[in-house]
Length: 347
Ligand code: ASP
Image (cartoon, rainbow, N blue to C red; front, side, top):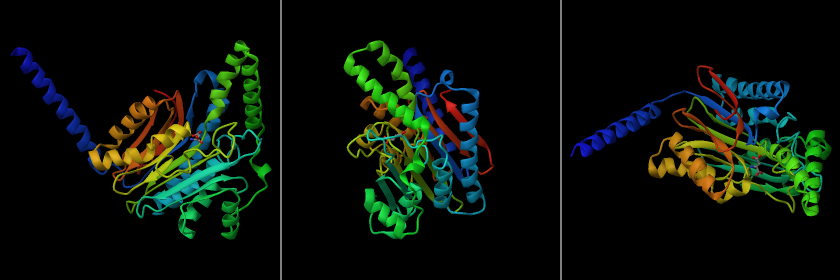
């Protein structure tokens, strides 16, 4: 009997805590807010110099402040998402736009998507080689075509017709990413030669260079959520491989009723798990909070599938969530009071 009473008391306390957590998430937390990522993966402090760490942090801060000031001045979440992502696309630090990883054929093939949470309209481009800003092209597909996704040369023709900037494919070249590809190719060769020692040496390096996608989710003063993601995909990809970043529901999702999400990680698993949409669906159909839904999808469902990576997400109340199952994720958020959170490693 005593045991039963203790058990019941514990249950009441647990339910009480949960309800408290829910009520605090249900209050309007922020009139507007913005959250970004610059990729997740084996990002370890021991592999990072102080200068590199400072450079990443400075660029994340520069990017998020661009979006934050748009939102603060009453601009739309869509503009905030595109302008913020463009800062990261133009930086060689991230695997998006300039600095994108290389394919097996030593080209850069970029994917991006954008979604508007108010209309649930969306746009995406996949496997593009000469559009300077894939995220801008993705949004244009949404606003200026009858389609959701355009790929390859067709997407370039559309972008040109829309007056977007077209660049020489060499614009995307960076020595660092090119060298990563060469190391991976060497590892493939080493593996064929069965040299385990060398293979282990290249392994750590490859894990570090695999990811680096960028993404942003924003809530504006009108209560509209937008989300976007832009990437070069995965180093050494072949055969026109397309990842999750341009797939609505996997790499990007936005719905004013629930949340906005941008993903980063091993794309194949994010497609199979429909990660971004699953977070929204859990909130809509199971009344989960943003925190509960992001945690379940990343730490439970994605992890069980064998996938690695993370998401940044934000709900209609301005709650924000970073969730990842990797060693690190470049990430930042800013609320309506201008409070900046800037992190790289797991804590
Ligand atoms: N998700 C991207 C892809 O699989 C890679 C990344 O996030 O770094 O293409």
